[in-house]
Image 1 (cartoon, helix red, strand yellow):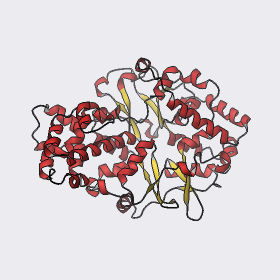
Image 2 (cartoon, helix red, strand yellow):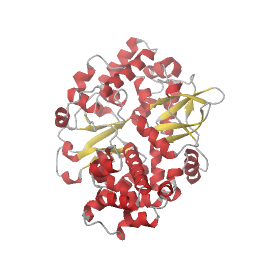
Image 3 (cartoon, helix red, strand yellow):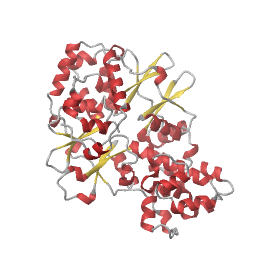
Image 4 (cartoon, helix red, strand yellow):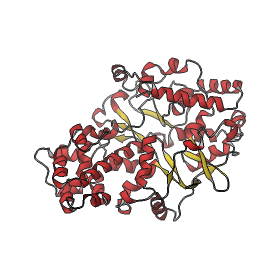
Length: 467
């Protein structure tokens, strides 16, 4: 059973447009039409997953789900994700510690995707402020809490929520930055060199030790806006809904959520208990599939070349890539705009793959600001080389496969390397012709039985997925 989070809200805000659900259907129909598998085998395997309870899935390493408190700073949340080598974590409300209901205790999920959205919005607004006149920027910085201030700067995204406009503009005005940088004389140059001052404002509290706060904005609100906590960016910048399932739910429903319905993680709860019991991710499922190597049902599917399974599920023209001489901020914007977790770095015009940029690489920009003080001018290749010099000394080659590679070898690469995509290349030049994601791999092993969604997921979940 899937347990909707915020069902009442879903019913109050009726979703008239089914565009997201339609895209999920189109993706899955495309896959089913391309898989060259006997129907009986697919039905048998799907039925088997339907009979496996979620409670049988292995627990997270250590047996305890890593959680982040809602009043944790974004900087500290980023450190937790990086140090624990995880992409996301449930967010717990510290104000409801005594509640026995998980609905009160959890606010959602924080992940790299949300942090990327927040950083890009903040950087863009800060650059706008720096490029404006000193008086204008200072005026907006003093009172731009909420939608009005964001609109004044031309912001149209969720940055207008929860005072984040002030956080972005503050990068230009806090601590006298606007005056010291001579912004009125050379605003464009100041924006391009936006770096350490921006990092101080969004990740540190140093500017406030010597900053005079505008009397029109209470200091507590000003600091909270300039130093956003996890709770303040959680809803405005979420990538996917918080959709827990109960321990009685079938693994088939979880696999469908992680594949067709594009969730990257599914929290597991036990009715009547306040804490999240388990946390099933796409990566954990693929690693589990890798351990099934040698079993008859697995080998019947996974020992086939990926081309026989219709992989990759995209044409070469649909591959979204970035070139080494383009800006790293453009790479993250491209991921944001297309809701994808990584890009192949290619050498035009033949799209020869030379590297990979992942959404979690944003941690390098934020945790090592001394290396990237000129991040607005930093190219993708310079970014990759700087990361390499700090770790292995050389750029790590992207994970690739060929059309005649078996699905089993692809699964093994994804599991052993702990990556979330593998690039399909062809020819002597290793031209990128496709991408295989964790979602694609999971989709190869299941299909959705008739009426499964309505019978096991339900109307409220459908609305949540369509938001």
